Length: 348
Ligand code: FES
Image 1 (cartoon, rainbow, N blue to C red):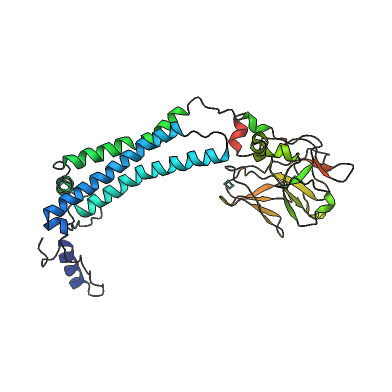
Image 2 (image 1 turned 180 degrees about the vertical axis):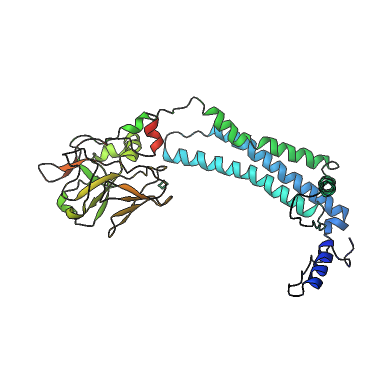
């Protein structure tokens, strides 16, 4: 199409505007401007080499991610896990970004950028129009030059073929891993275990808490215990949010008939959301609502931590508490049900 001719769409728009003058005029497609790669074969060749290079970088990223997966395993320390995760993320990103950038650059610099206008139809297109569409697709493939540019074709196919390795290898190698979820049924809490502030480990007296206050709580442990890797891992399951309500506002807790799991308006609930396990920690004092920041599940702390909004489908498990002879808050027992997302409960 020459730069001075109307596109078919503009012709239709002109006729439409004449018949319905109240409608605004279609500004049409801007005049076509040739790119450097359209008029300079050397420039096209340079771009072709550049695109092949980017696909090559993607291949290197995919291979590097597989190497990193096996060579840099998490060693159980936080630093080791971070390093392994960061390297995997970077190499996967290089692999995927390489494909994306090369494909975009190929489309923008080498594939035909001539405007094609397709008329709109209210119902299914006629067989003739469909035939034309198929022909357009074939022309597009021809325009892309994929058949002529063997190097690019090979580079693109290699990058696309290798990228799935970045997630397939970790997935396959995780078959047979530790999927025993029964460990989520038990936590560090046990009878007479004191409640302590997170992260200092200082035990909490009932008298320390004023009405309306909230505290992040862990099981009491010695400083030495708190440094051990096992304790830190187990602590993640035992974290609790402690809230003191006016006893008159407390409508219910989760205790069986005749018992109570709260103490003088103080209630303790698992901080691990029953939706997919985010830490719920946004407490709204006026409404007694506890909000999960991930998907906005909201739990009523005055009413057994029942779900009042959001995708979670069961209340937060309650930690039964009381006080010992010295006035410190202690657990009556472990949680009565599994903490965390509900599917753990079903997989016991
Ligand atoms: S993890 Fe809490 S609402 Fe989704």
